[in-house]
Length: 201
Image (tube, rainbow, N blue to C red):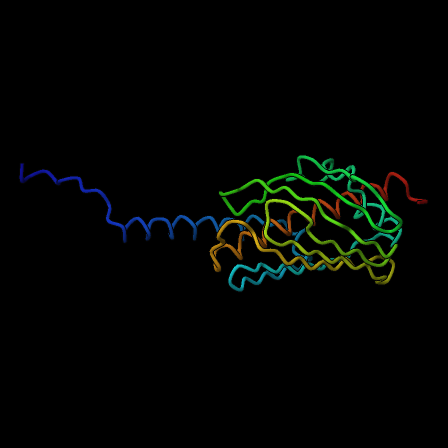
């Protein structure tokens, strides 16, 4: 029937264009959805081959001791980090902890399970360094440093990882930055919540 338009399946190029348009719309919605309270959490993401590096820096109006108590509280981390399902200290030897965690890593509309056992070395009230012993990632190194800043504390975090899945460099960078900022917002909120509940500690 010449007067009717024939329905055709989209070509591979058209499907790719539709996917890119969807991803672009998602990225735009992420940019507009970011609350003002998160804008001072600086996140830099770099992807070089398989390696993903995330640098995060933010200030919190709390003492070094108040901040340290939260960033090292692995046994209760599931109470305030929404992507974590399980988090517990397996053992402790002096200033070294062995930590098991299980959760999900999110990249926009996509997510995958993450499981790890890490060795965490502590320099009390100053820094912590962790390395992957076993888990679902090929590499995971995390360094966190606390420094006094005025009446508060500056938290600086550097994470280098090699996920077990492919991350698209451009789009992946945007999604990773958004999720990292959300995670550290949750961390900062917990520091402030505990400070308010126990102002003398």
